Length: 120
Image (cartoon, rainbow, N blue to C red; front, side, top):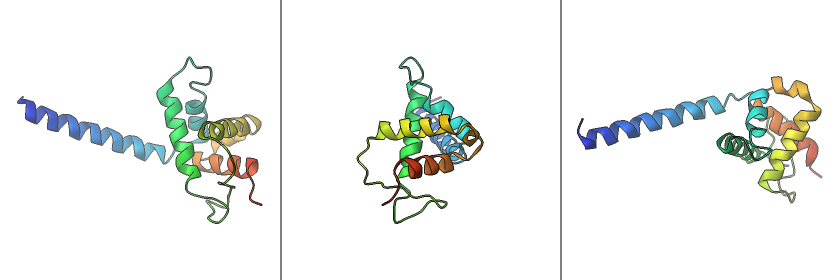
């Protein structure tokens, strides 16, 4: 296979893989989110899964605030909180609400953030 054709083929396969993982992220369950978020809590796990968790939570958190609701949830996005603290907030909320692992991932994030950082 000529090098130019191989590079083109590799790019198409890579883009297809990225597209399929993005589609699956939109249907992430609470259990899947919890697994991703706790994958590297001790520092000895899978940093890629931990990054997926952070990206998912940040992505969801960017879609709503005190003015714009997400499925009935809102949160004070102006609260002084770091991105890693958002992950800890979601994990702690899930620890306190184990049934949430059966919910859709974006609803878990919405509920956790709205409880931890309520709008004034």
